[in-house]
Image (tube, rainbow, N blue to C red):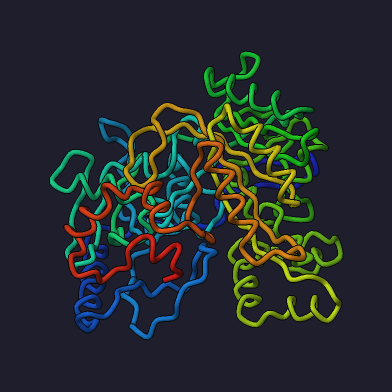
Length: 482
């Protein structure tokens, strides 16, 4: 990652461009001190008071109740602890739970590796991606982020820090931790598997005129990890309409031809708009990993950031997902845009921010339902194949699913109420034998919720690791807005 490269437009890529953020592992002693501070802050919370983290950022979209209880001190828990690139079972990294993927990737790329799955937004934390699920274009071969975790340390609801593995004393917690959203404890250290990287990713943007052709192609690529005999290392896509959708096939590259034609979507160009325009493309590995972050997929258009004039004035360093997320938070607090819409006589709007998974064979049907009932495009598509059995998010191992991501607002039609479209989505996902991620609004009844999300396992694990209920239960947190 130290070479200098020149794009076709003359842009010079130096080491600082390929890896603009550098980080070094902090070591075990610093990590131990940070965990001691965390546990000390836990002991300082009055008995019977709820426990929460003192976090300044979040990638969640559901509202949360305010708390007067001081948050746990997470100072010093946002780094990589160590790397073991010569492990006999494959390279690994020990990472603190509050480490963002931006920092994690900066550290591992400097050593020619990356996490096996890198969620598409820079400030998602490793602990958050594991306890709240994450996904990206390597998921069709590597599953979800928690499926490349070998062991993790968890601060449990009763104040202990326990080490969990798939087959150890705390295997029940290991299996229930994904999709628990901090209701069973907080990850302080995670040992994750790494993959080697090459400097570039070449992409082919395949257009499909029907959703059935699209899903047939996904099935063929997942089965062979290739397309027309060319290897496929990354796979995601975008649906613009029933007649126009794209699969983006990414392949590792290290040749001079690829280096000479690299694209840059951190400036004036918008990545998703390139898909209909470019049958092929190429990016540095770093630019590929964060290709969606600059414009928060396409959601930056809500702030005018895709308008060429506004884009020139908007500092490039502030064109990133966490900035847009803070703007959404300000709107949720002050409702400026909503008041302007009311004065203009426009209807109120419902937030529809969801990621769902449906079986591959039912994906075309779900997308047609979506286009008929949710007037909001584009839609992100990301195939995944589960690697194991996880009690709170039971996807059959080896089965191919497609994550469908859609994020925005829709007008509340006359006679409808806020939340009605999200309820329709939940029912449609159920009808198509799918699952829904829980980072955003959820409207399930309690009985229905526990049927879907580990109700047979969760109470036993909860009782073992949080017997006094210092942490909220999962239903209360994600549906009851705790």
